[in-house]
Length: 275
Image 1 (cartoon, one colour):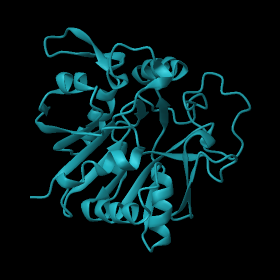
Image 2 (cartoon, one colour):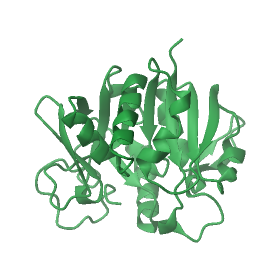
Image 3 (cartoon, helix red, strand yellow):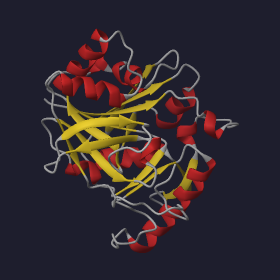
Image 4 (tube, one colour):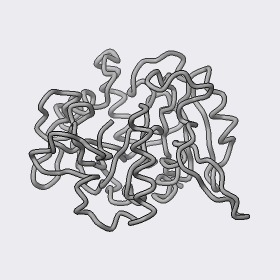
C-alpha cells in the first residue's frame, strides 16, 4: 500500500529565538481547544502538522538533533491516527542532509510532503493543490524574496530555477512547502551524493536536478507565509492568526498580507510576509 509521509526537519538550533528552554518547534503560538472545550497553547509545529494531515499524510518523520528529545516527548508515537517516527541529524549540516536522514524509510512508490515546522501559512488546504507524480512546490508571495528560496517559473508553472537568498531575484514567489514521489526523493539523494553532499540548501540541489533533465512544477496557491523563527516573525504570526479568525482569508485583495506584483511596498508595515 502506498504511504504518504510528512517529513519535518526539526534539527535546527533556533539561534534567532534564543534563549529558549525548549525546542523552537514547540514555541507556543496561538491556542487550540480540547474536546472538552478547554483552550490550550498550541506549538508552532502543530500548524504544519495540521496542514499535512489535511493533505492525507498517514506517517510522520521528524528529523531532530540529539538534544531535542522534548519533541519526541511532546508528539509521541501517533498524531491523529498517523504513525510518528524520529531520525537523528547528529550535527547541523543543512536542509538536504536533514531530509535524506529519512531515506531508509521511503520507498519509490511513497508520496512525500515537506514543510518547515517554524512557519505558519495559509490556506490550510494549500498542499492539496500540489500534483502527485512530480516534484512540486507550494508558492507564496513575499515582500523580501531575497531572504528565501525564490522560485522562477514559466507561464505554465514549470520551474526554471530556484534562486537561493539571491539579491534582486527574478520572482517574488518563494516555496513554503513541497511534494514529491519517493522515486524523485531517491533521485535527488543520488544527485546530492554525486555532488559530494555540497548542497546545504534545497534550491541548489533542485537546480542540479533540473540541469540533469528533471522537472518540477510550482503552484501559486499560497496566500500568507510567516517565518516564526524571529521575534518579529512571532509577532506577525499572532497577527496572522487573529486575522484568519476574523476573515478566514476570504479577502485575497488585502495588501497587508500578500503581494504578488513586481513592485512591493517600500515598507513592510504590518505585512505578514516578512521574516
